[in-house]
Length: 187
Image (cartoon, rainbow, N blue to C red; front, side, top):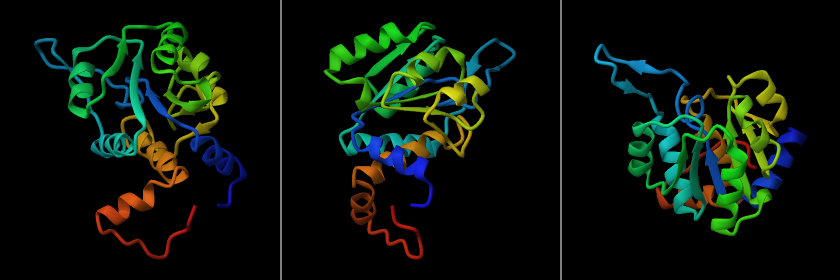
């Protein structure tokens, strides 16, 4: 591994037990799409969904903590088997403390992904604070890691792969699916 900062992220990722996600701008591209009847829709990335499923298979909990309430979030969470869903909370830190208490998890065991200023308190509190590539500048400054991918376009999968590799699950997944990768850097 070439980058010292990335090496530190991998070291922290070994301890992660919960990946906590913002929705708009992280699980989605941040766009709000409405039809002519006023019905809202959102775009989710299938690669992010697979990353979430792979983390779940590895025993990592997944949670959603969003400032905006949307029935689509409940639908997507159910689709992915995510039971820990809190939305409609712009003050996220108090809810985060409830989550820690409920699950018996320490802040350093959490990776949180956000994209805007409302996410800064969590980005600064968790074990790994992740801002998506197209996050607000201040969220990026508060984060430990900024993804190469934008929100709703593979950013979640990027951090899922880092956690899986750091914890030694990635090679097992490849083996389970009879996948052999050659000519790649090891982690």
